[in-house]
Length: 138
Image (tube, rainbow, N blue to C red; front, top):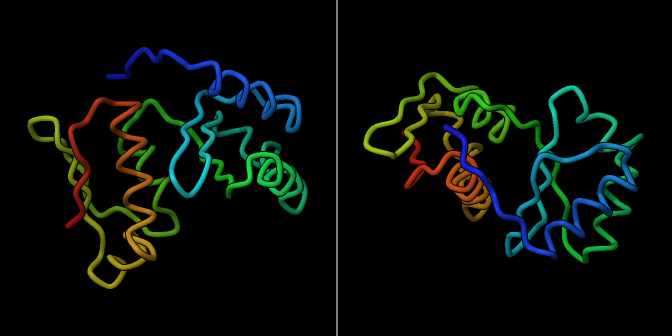
């Protein structure tokens, strides 16, 4: 179940800038401590990133933070899989509002990311977009 989002002025301005730079209308933007994350339609990721990452570099300079672009899916499992790629999910379930993703034991570190950055980003995004209380990894 997707949540209706209320966007702040800062978020609307960021989405407008992203659209002007990339030519892609994003579905959402999330400001995190270490980065700005844009969610775009799956078929538009390449165009949003730009040739050789040019759009992402330009936007990173504008925001003064790293910019990440991910494909948005209304299917929570597909969405999470895109967030932790290239790690593949071996299972995904939601119990009492908590999403649990299963990954191969050898890939757990890659799914978590350096300093927990990848899992924390995924956690923030699934809370915002799907209303999950938490995202856990096993």
